[in-house]
Picture (cartoon, rainbow, N blue to C red):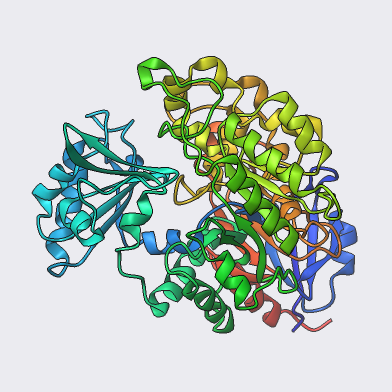
Length: 554
């Protein structure tokens, strides 16, 4: 029986440039033919497996260009505190933490992720004292949805050695009120607590990598990333990923980004011989990440103009002074890494952009390096111009507007929020914005991201910056080809043209022909990576193989 696969009976989105086709033929892991049904069927050899799309649409597989795959996988077994799961009250947060503490062995850590103080009925972060009520003996640490701050209970602070006189580290803060610790740790101060949490075993990390990969495959992803490798278990994470690959448990093609802050592993990994390496499409070690600022929802993204006084004022927080940031960027640039640098506010974007420009002076130019500014949410026209001139790519998360847009209005005002994450402007100016989720910060569901790009609606229904809305085709382009471009892979992924890798997703609905609200209820029915099924909701390939075996020989 032939290993080729023919998809007909629906539409095939080839890519933004060439639009739609009627049929697609896969052979040897690549697109063998795409075009009209007659011409593609004519190219299919005897014994070809056939899938009837029944009106569904095929798109290039999604590319999750900015997420944290290992933390996402580990988080699947932690306390889920995301607002959409029902945690919109302090009582519900405490209930879930308390239930986990009761099940945990005495002294074991209880970890949770995803609460949003802006969504809680109390309008603030939980406190250590409140967590103590439901877990007096077990250390508890819960992380806000943005990942830039979290709350520890008293047992956790004791385990971390944090007391009233512990100084704030550079680029971080330990909140104190009325002479006492509230339990809130912001930005780089989080390491004080995180470093006290026992590291997961290699077995646990490999299982988490596989679990996250299976989850993403069920959503239509064939490529993903881990944007801060080393911040959970140090160099052991590199070994876990290599083992997952060797055991066939790595589901997505991975673009790996080493943690490059001084507390990260980039220096140690370099000393142990790890170098930029894109030769293995399944596990590419491509970049180094440095944090420039925090989050706009948490009031720690760094801006030139202050947050609204009603939200607390201030201009946010830089992780490093200019001299340190520019030195780090120059170092990693000269080592040959792509720079994937976190900057959300315009002041942080400026610091990072100047640092990249300086790093490109002399005999190590920026041209062709495809450095990235991650998030890049609130920038001005001059910054966009300089990014375009230097080939520096924005890697935004449109889903932030869906989940946090109303909070941005509260913190920054309507005028500044409406021009945030300017997807349409980026495309019109010739940038290649790689849409992504930053999961587990936001939902990894790609259809929420697509809906947001097309409508600019928040989860409360507020339309923010309608002029920045995209067509569905443009939104899919940003979530597929643009991601591949940031990973130097646009010659083999991101479109469905002849010769490209057969990384594709069959969607349950033709998202190009339905109302935007219906996009939210769309699913991936089939996900292929290199022509092989990594997810098959309805067993389409099994049925196709059985039909091919029963078919009479030509």
